[in-house]
Image (cartoon, rainbow, N blue to C red; front, side, top):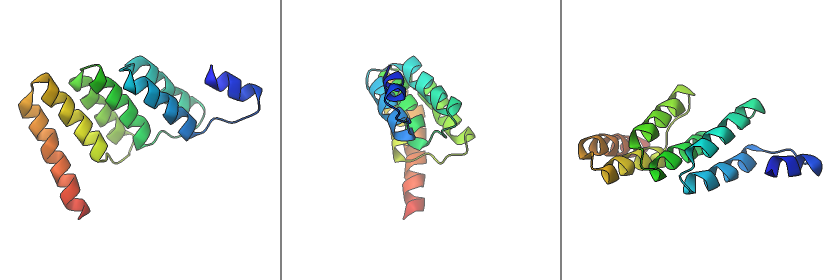
Length: 119
């Protein structure tokens, strides 16, 4: 509906517009909605960025689906983007919340490696 309204008034949706909508979906754990908007970005020749993928990762985490969050982190990398602290922390926290402490620790270690390399 937002994009239709923008079209009516002659505005062109940007990456930021899509990201705001994706963020709203992710906060509700609406994985399907976040993924749909990620695909809409691509169909409009807008290149999804790390924040776009992080919204999908967060939606999976909110839905308590850490394996799916992990899958989307891998898709972020496959898109030739560099995961950031939020990417790793969201997946790690999701596994921690699910009780899979071994997998959570693996992602926390990856986060530590990322932050050490940034120093």
